Length: 171
Image 1 (cartoon, rainbow, N blue to C red):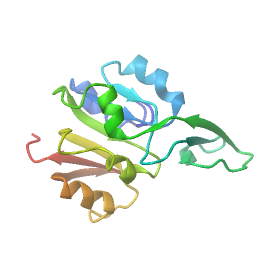
Image 2 (image 1 turned 90 degrees about the vertical axis):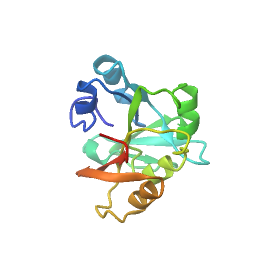
Image 3 (image 1 turned 90 degrees about the horizontal axis):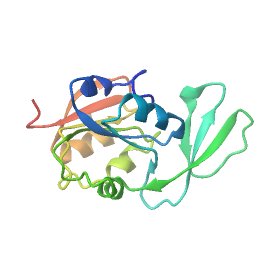
Image 4 (image 1 turned 30 degrees about the vertical axis):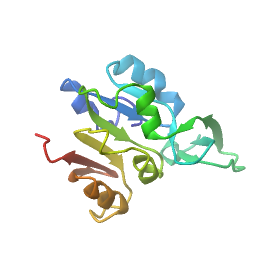
């Protein structure tokens, strides 16, 4: 997800009137999402399966190297922020949006734990027309691509390390 406008590959959907669920463990962006994209649901959490704590590692010199970790490391050029953890299914149920039709788009950026995150969501119960998920494997045969295909989503396009999957009814 990152910033709601800068480098956002979901902002185009927002400008077309869509709303969505944006999940990112970086707590520094929460106020930006509230200000610039109030119709979206921004979730500041780490989506994990069977993990009780996580840290968002902030690289003060190279922010592009920020990452999610589960044990603190001693590195002088990093700051650590403890972030909450939950499953995607639990988070969406708490937001009471699993069955609402106005959620068309889900964007997942879980700092390398994206496959783990999407597996915490029952894709039969929760039907989003579009799911954008970060996948550093460029192949359309990656684990994430295969998982999404097995759950009746088709790879529609790629934007750098993000893949956009759509349902067969998407138009």
